[in-house]
Length: 316
Image 1 (cartoon, rainbow, N blue to C red):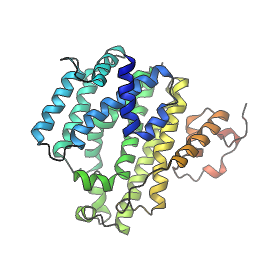
Image 2 (cartoon, rainbow, N blue to C red):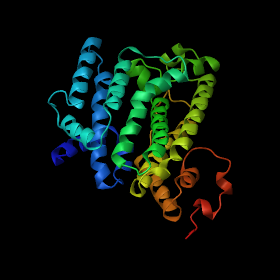
Image 3 (cartoon, helix red, strand yellow):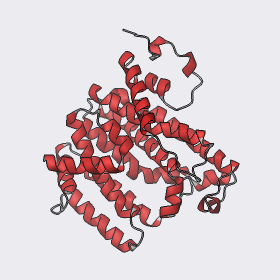
Image 4 (cartoon, rainbow, N blue to C red):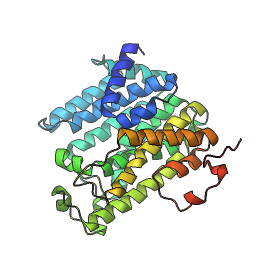
């Protein structure tokens, strides 16, 4: 890939994905450059449907189809990121089906604004999040890809669920979308109209708490697969998980009120997450143990962990 193409992808990631960009900086160059391009490709496709306030649905579909044909090499790309993505797809053997599944998921956003059950939402995430995990795994080139892939898919879904729960206010105001499953809302006595009015309540807080817990189960399963990645990729992926799930602590501190204000991480908080993750990683290279120790995922075991689980005392 040409440096100018990598730089174009990097600029998009730095502007639109600050949290993931921070973790990306710790990837080895061979993976970091490809990640800039991948992220930029995902973002370009996402913006077709997310930043389309006055764009007719048929125009959005046409734009996605044009993007699909460029990404798959069916026509010459008209964007440096897409040119780089074509090269990246061929170099790492990324299956055309994964690109197709991802674009199909983006097309779903044109007309679907509510999801009845979590299973329905998970089907959508198979394209919008799981395909991302598959492609990221491909560029890392783990020795045991078959072992790494299921966990990568799950971790991709965890990241996206955190985004959904963090962005409830933005999604309803700017796109009239609700990604919290309707089934979960009904189980806790929440009407969609309440979210549309940005009206926080104890019942909405209970629904959010339930989905946070579900998402944290995904993180645990996803992080368990980091051990299968190349050694020089493990800390950056672990750091991304710690940073994303830190939003859950902010949401809980706001008493699950993501309707009045959007939860966000300050630069200082991100740096603190980075510092403590690197510290514990220095003493213990077990991703699950470090995640359990430093992440915002609640656990009754954390305070009982000993040195062998990375509490800052050398184990070697």
